[in-house]
Amino acid sequence: MKSAKWAALPLLLLAACATTGRQGAADDSPPRLMSWSEQISEREAWLEKRHGMLLDMMRRHGVGMWVVVNEEFHDDPLTQFIAPPRPYAGNRDIFVFVDAGPEGLKRVALSGYSEATLARFFELPEEGRKPQEVLADLNTRYQPRTIALGIGGKRGVTRSLTKDSYAFLVDSLGAEAEARFVSAAPLIEEYLDTRIPEEWLHYQRLVMLTEAVVKEAFSPEVVVPGKTTVGDVRRFLYDRLWALGVDTWFQPDLRVQRKGADGASSRGFLAPAKEDVVILRGDLLHVDFGITYMGLNSDWQKMAYVLNEGETDAPEGLKRALANTIELQDALMLRASRPGRTSAQVYTQTMAEMKEKGIEAMVYSHPLGNQGHALGASIDFRSASRQEEAKTLRLGSYIAIELNTATSVPEWDGQKVFVMQEDPAYLTEEGWKFFVSRQESFYLLGRDGQGGQRSQGAKGGKGVTTRGMPML
Image 1 (cartoon, one colour):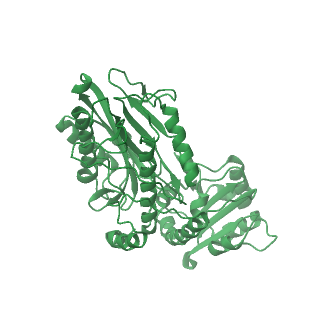
Image 2 (tube, rainbow, N blue to C red):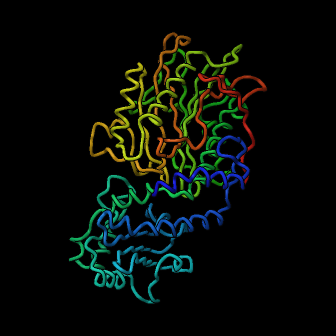
Image 3 (cartoon, rainbow, N blue to C red):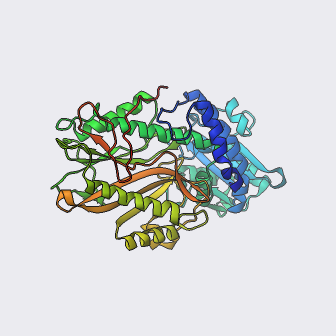
């Protein structure tokens, strides 16, 4: 993706936001979501542009032919991103991309249910021709040096080809062609980790919707201290997504930290609370939540404090803990990250700064986009400890800035409190930038008639009330 396009992005967005009545993230009014037919139309426009970038990507990775196989009842996770995003009900639908040399990129779809939409993006064989014949002809005509398949990758989306479909391709292309089979993983990663400017505004809307749903979940309409359980909040999140006509890519989790209570751990992190845990005054709540919309995914973690009787704000020690996490965000996003740097370099510099400042920190940030745990450069301990995990930050990529700090809180008798945050961001020449403003103060619960406001926070954030939700 060219730097000039990303440099001009803010101006493009201001013009687009003017038509929606939304200037970036400054206004808390909810975004308008597109109908399903509108989403399909928009995503098909993106697909044309993505196909236009594919030939250069294939040549960079030495790929002569790329084959994606979608099976009935076993959709390939790539299909909706390399073909029109519609249901595929054929026994076996095959999408072939060939570097045809001077002819450019040749795109062929072998589907049991061919229709006009596919014909916009792919050549369709003559009626009656078997897929095996077409594949054999493509191989004979173009003799691709390599045939890239969804095999041998470390992630599900890069190793999705089934054993039977592999055997089908060997039978169709010939035993000799099997020697030219290679993993498509590097090509798939660049393809999925390359964002286009047209996605940006829709992704910001997705993040704004994620924020709005979480604010509603952390509001007095949902949480009543001494009565509401963790399971109640989780069920609210599921039901709200259903009402909005969107989906989620993982189960929403809540964590509860409480003065005098030891927090259970899981895989080195504070463990999610059990569903029957009742939320009480004085609790520090955390939610991990994401939404799927337009073939894109968000990932979002925020925290709320339940006021004790007589309190009007969170204790200073908790606000100090939040300030430490904000300091960690700044170190990673603004001072350590730049396009072209490796994830190992970013992680090492960030953790060195935290050590110098005496802040106990963890960083486990991961790419976002077409998947919630997407492909690309993850900034975490693995990328620093194993060099093969270290990847280069790509301009324009999206990421979940996921991290936490642990701070001893005097008001909790020195008990260590974890402040976990996760915010979608995109990479610019100056570092990562949030799609919407980060949390600089806790959501406050437990004050009768005044729920939904924020604490003053470490930086004096103003109170914000929960607004109505977007309608489809």
